[in-house]
Image 1 (cartoon, rainbow, N blue to C red):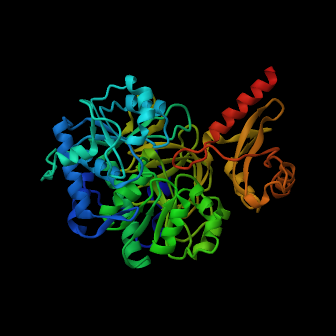
Image 2: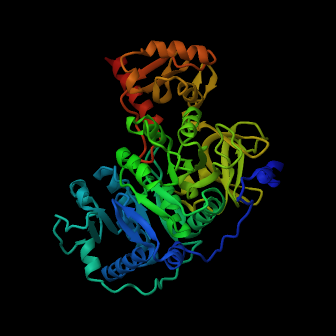
Image 3: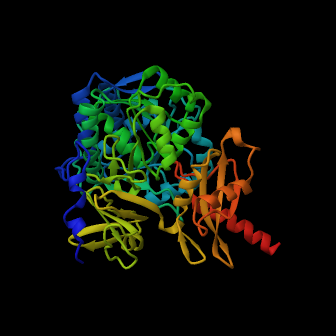
Length: 562
């Protein structure tokens, strides 16, 4: 299949942000543990992590990582084994992560929000033999323990105390492993093939059906880290003009947190204030006292920070570089963030399947509201129709991606792999499932998830477009728009809305409908509005419209049968 000129000529090449190039060299023999070792050597005595005031240098993290690796080797861990991490963000997560990677194992990290049943699904699906978990999850673990064919369970107490869970032949304490191995492993001798060896099985958020494991090789993630390093190098040298000091609030069990926070630390020599949970009082205290200059997040995090009464009189201007990912940022919130900090918000786009970054628009780039920027280095993007034909510039269709960061494939899902990959122009393309368009400068505008599109009386209606308008209403803190089955209209348009505190009881659902009708085309405005206390979200903070749809469908079914 012939590629269109905008892809062949990389139409975005003349519009790249400062510091970003069209292509970069990505060595094929470089592994993630190579990057970790390089950082430990280069930044040894600098502080890497601040965890509730306890500082760890790069040298100290390297030492603890090698000691743990020695302990894991003695337990029988070997190259190719799958190790699952069920831990919140902490120094322990980093130590376990790099120790396991250094031994040539494959990691699968589990959300700290998961119940035992969800954790068991991931362990079974990934084929994990070892589980490293925080002691306070033991109750959930016990519910499903009999279903799991684990060889060893390593129990971590993040406060450094002895866990209440007794040691057995199968259960060993993290502290015990370190105490039994005071000597560090001098070298990670395992032979890693970066292009073939899977570093991480990253489970998707499960927005449709059971979560699938995206197999990311060392080369996939290294490529994405080097693509992102272009941006961080420019930040250090020309934008922030100094070391990066980051508030680490992205969950590290997700590839967004791993690539952009956890592994970027050894790459940039930056310092991270580590947050196991999205703790607004502590985040604001850190902004006031420590003056961090970098913050990566998802839209809901920025919404909650802006709406917290604790933020009211706090100077956020130290945060020169902030970047949003995981889902599109409402334009009104982006404007409000710039007013609060004095700096424009960077925005990127990525997927679990792409390690994760595909596009980026850093704060110093030419801004186009509603756009997630242009493709990062060595990455191609295109727009296709349902027949896999490439569409011209300006037309809307499915966004597809080719690049070194694109996953090897889904774990044990050959049929799924056939659906998401296709060959064209000598490249292997990944179908993202996102509806988007590209302009003549290569800027990409996300429209919506294809599965979320609403058909109202034959019109295609995109929830995100309606949500953007709703965010302009002063009473609305968060919202989600869905389609619900309707015999006359095909689907009707419903909005679930969280009101700001000061508006609760002072505005009605009907008033929001009347206001919406004035703001948009007659076929777009929501016919049904519900005020809710919360919206279901993936642990990365992405609103799960599917769950709202399912809930409303069940409710309608119950009412019609009742």
